[in-house]
Length: 459
Image: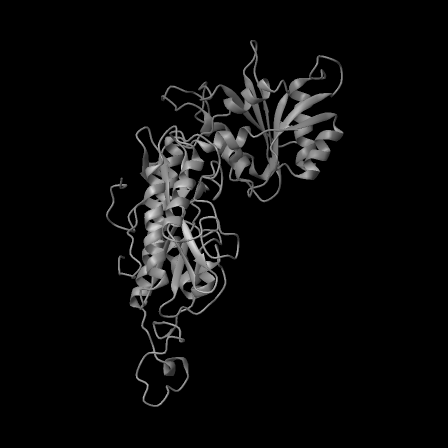
């Protein structure tokens, strides 16, 4: 189930070749109607992945808001983006124009939109007035303006119910409640994000290919490294001792190789492929490889597991996630048994992925396989064995729905990272991770990367 590319570094991130990203707001409007509420409100900034998904607005680090009001027999649904005034043109382009049906060439509008309809039937607009007010205040003003003076029960006043994401900032919630609105939490956004469109899958596939290039760079650096003696680390070798000192770091390009040097090499490759490392390139060696996401600086020594987890962010916000484990000059002991167990767990986990399967069954099969190899499948944090779930959803967030430990029924369009692993805090860790999309027939690995605990030049 390959992506069709044999080159670990293949894949351009040229967004001009990709279909546009357009979020269907109809499910959000439907959730409002189903809850007998009046509107949906989200408040956040460019670091709020849910708000970015809803608006496709790669906005500034100051807060902004989105209000969605469902339609009725007499009017279509409406969505209003309260954007900072300096970003109006960008918001119009990304939130409004990008959501219209494609132009057939007959429109007369100055912006090229003409009379084109919104693809989901939810009319969009951008408002930049009252830019000095808090985004929560601005959202409350839009609710009053769009819904008029009637409350949710038809009475006069501002007694309305607004659906909000669970993560809405506290200060925004206070402003909305002060304006006379009751707030009710909804998981409608998380539910909508869980199943990806073809355009989203295209983005995920491209950024995962960049992650593959980063991993190939890491493996090449390890393959080119040398096992030096104690004298290479500034120490005198014991008289008559010609064997390499396994306490010394590997050497690469004339200097000791550390997890930070390897991380920088990976991140440089990610940048060259048009993605950002997002501060999430994890490299652990020896005991620190048992840390699930190690970002520190340790020497990399011969015989130790080197666990590399590459999780870049692409230009449209979508994430990659790829992990492999290597050992240079190993003795074939714990790390070899752990590697075989994790590879086998990965295979049985993938074998469970198909439409209709429960996500938790994927975790259950992987854990059982690791148990069959003698590793504790239910180890706690800091213990020896399998200490985490088998995987998680991936999209604009690195971790989103569905979790592979949940009772969610897998459906086509779900995108999940499958990542079995085993760890020993005194020795190291082994993890393999790939992103797959659930298809009508089963699954597709978005970007293949070879296995093999001994590092090999693949660039």
